[in-house]
Image (cartoon, rainbow, N blue to C red; front, side, top):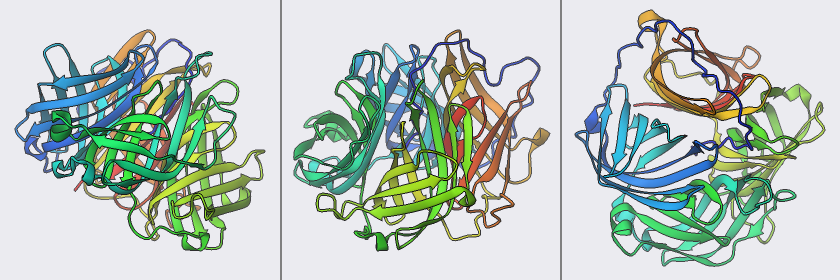
Length: 527
């Protein structure tokens, strides 16, 4: 799943650490699992985004090579920040992986280093947050296939989702922006067309479907391309750098005056061309901003069942808008529908729309989605005054339950709200827990997180946590919003309360339901 970008025009205020306070903290349970330094071996593409020390959006995308023995042999990244777009080569670095997949990773050269906390989901992918106090950001990494580092390695129809900030409007500030769509590549460096939806806070409203003009892409014709899979692509007049993961996925970062980050994923399976072909139950999670009045962070999570006739049923939807929370249930919905777009310009693109009207609200919830496969999509929130996007996945057949055994990795990102509802800096979390019987002192996991603020910088490492879950008694099959709570071991203790939407035994979407922060993320099963 792509990293959720909780974007906002921010007001500097006093900083209070979420887990501040005195007193001793007991240790987390001993790390248990089958990971080691040997688990991280090969070449990995990574992407991260967040905020720098000036509260400006920052994004980075790149590649590093791990030797399986705790050493980084080389790496390359592109960074988009207020300083412009810069390329950084890494000549070395180190990492250390615990048995539970948690660890640290440093990418370095002669003048600087990028310090990270990581959690492996498997030997091929993991989660990461920045911990060097130069910015607070989070993202992920995934094993690359160097055999795909060529133009022929990029061929077919790709669904993409990028989000970040539009810095082309110099009036006051950068505005949040989300861009989703589908492009058609030919394996020879040409984009023959596609469809795109742009939701830009600097515009009067969502663009609706737009035809993508013909353009080009190319893997770099030098060691950056052959060694790291780096290349460039132009989509709808916007220039991006990409790093090839394999023939099915690219990691994208804008290198124009704007700053956006995301993925492009090859469409597979039979993509429905009519509304009758779209059926089943789906869960989704989006993060972004409300741009009505004072801009603030927003996240939404929900689920629905599509009946094949254009109707949505069994809908649950939770929203945290700048600390104001709202739940939509089947009894509060006056109408709900969907379409798979079959108009001439977008037929076959996998584009669809959702509209959900809560009878207690004036504005409807509106979404655009592009199907990557019959069970996976990117989704863009185009409700009135909202710029947000994220992922949508088919839910497994019920009854759904939380994973009760094994080990789980997680990554959350959010914005801390002060008591006066001005916005603090971003906070980013990465960690791991075991949902079985609690270990020592009642804790069943641990996490690292970093928070930057106008009057302080805080990094919390190896924080013991107790994760508890509960199935909503009103939705006993587990398909609806469920309870998920994380209690830290710091003194005083801090509690994070989430609404959880279970996708299957491997993935859970989390949306923070606290009034003092807007936060969202995912939980993923480790092998």
